[in-house]
Image (cartoon, rainbow, N blue to C red; front, side):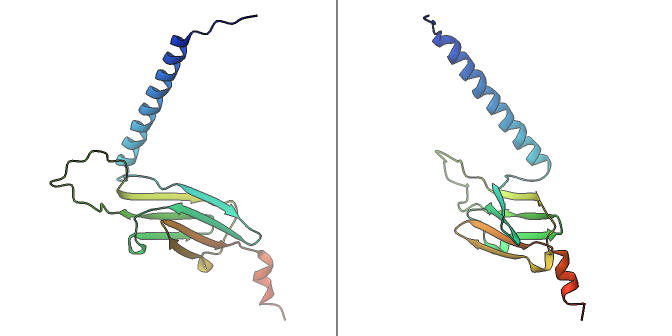
Length: 144
C-alpha cells in the first residue's frame, strides 16, 4: 500500500507548533516580569547516599550577586546578572543572553540540615551541597 504524503500539511503543522512555542515564551516572559524577574536559571537536582546536590547555571553572575537560602525541604537561589555592555550607543545585531534579576525555588526530595550546606561557584555553575537529615545522628551525641 502506498501512502501519499502531503508536504503542505506538514508545513502547516510545523508552523502551528512554532507559533505555539512563541506564544508560550511570551507568556513566560510576561509572568517573570510580573514577579520583577528577568530570567530563570536552569537547575539540576541529584542525590548521593547522604547528600543532595543542586546545580544551577548562572553564567556571568559573581558570588557577590548570588543569595542562597536553605530550609529543611527547599533551596532558594536568587541574584542579579548584570549587563556587561552598556547599551547606550551600541546597535545590537543579536541579543540572546539574558540579564537582570532571577529567583529559583527548588523543592528537595528529602529533608536536609540547613547549617551544613556548602556552595561553590565555578565556570558559571553554582553547586549547593546539602547534607541529608538522618534521625539517628540526632541521638548519636546525646546517649552515653
